[in-house]
Length: 636
Ligand code: ACM
Image 1 (tube, rainbow, N blue to C red):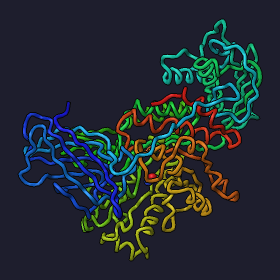
Image 2 (image 1 turned 90 degrees about the horizontal axis):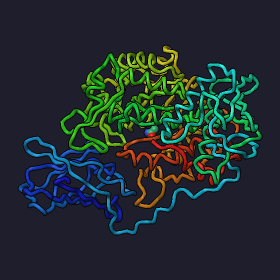
Image 3 (image 1 turned 90 degrees about the vertical axis):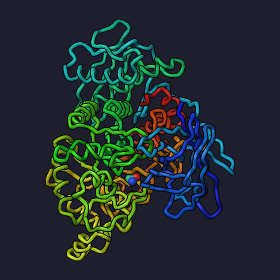
Image 4 (image 1 turned 60 degrees about the horizontal axis):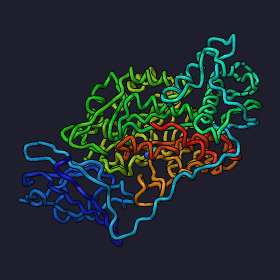
């Protein structure tokens, strides 16, 4: 048991974002004095605030440190209480409070403090509704995403499927890849495939059929064999995954789900960009977690893993030219260059991917027809980079001259510092050896208003290039980045703000519309290729209901699984520009993701809902069928 515990509540106040009350309980046997209390919370204290019972000593983004008034001594069993009014936004959920806390004593020791949910005072909480109905199926087949067309008759359940005689080695290997995938996802279940002929099983005959579309497959069922036809390896793999899914459901819930012994499935994806993003900056995910998430993507027939490798809170990719990025920029703690954020407590936390890790992850994904699109988030969201490599800073720029929405001061790479381009050139050189993807994602989001305007180097650049302000400086920077990527044979992907201030060359640029659906229309009309990832439907860190008790972030509202499932991004786009829409993507921003249980609670089943929306046409979507099947689907 911890010696100290912090309880926090929030009380609404007319005309402000309300008042926080902190109560620190001393559960130790000694009086508590001569200390500060640090905690991390997305409910940030504003510059303008009133604190009763203590003083704010320091704050950086989500990190806060408070001091009691001089001479305070908390006896054993006693408590210290202070209140703060003056917040940067109103908390909406119980998870908007403290994410980590510790005490620092005069001798430099840091001691962990336990903490609970943010309690709501002075207002009734709504009741969190059930998020997933029991579900109902009309066709008794467990396929998710649901195929383009299907006409089947249910029959006996084969005990396993095996390759027909004379199956080619490449098809045998494809079958092995899928059975291994299945065994990783469901290690306690019976295997769906065997290389040996098994009595009571059924043969799969593989046919290469060039008339079938890329990524598509057909399955024809009879009582004695299954014919799997495809033009390419991806289609073949999707067909094998469908077979594994059919067996999985028929075994798990035999009253509801069956295996076909007559009829056919003809299937192909709706979009060619069926993505899932993961933010590994705010929270670090070890290689095994990343490869498991990729397994889950493959099972759901998602084909893009957008890997958000850097942000203000950490730089996670080994760059051999700049070891400081991982040594300094991937480490947060009370005595580190990067202060604790987002769940970090008294102990430092760190983690980065070595280039060997990256190669393993990319190869793992490729074997499952998942492409890894890496993101280096520039020019904004770069606190970890700037603190690791101070040569990137214009030394004459006034400190704290602008702040990001997350509260980071001066957090953007400077477009007028020539070293910025030398640095990024070397980073891109190493990235292109690691990532074979068509696109490199360079972020481009949330450059704060007023960025760089207090930098003398930027002022000179603005004069020289006739640039009017932050947005035009950003466009100048991104145009140079675009050229650097082109020189390395890569296309540019970014967030929707890349278009600001004149944007970049449309040719070979793909932008992700996240702020709201309307920006997707604007981008498409401006000539950009677009992936729709609106926060209001596809940001899986948003809470799933309005109720206070429901965990999650709230700035984009809340997204029940049914809304995520039913949302039709394409419906937002006028027909004339629909061809610019490449697909859709789920985003997993991890500020709040302090445990695996939390990850699973927020990400599932919504990730599978995005997967079905990405693969299956509107008229084939069915929320009740989805609900019946998704409960048998894997989580992290
Ligand atoms: C974003 O959510 N800042 C892309």
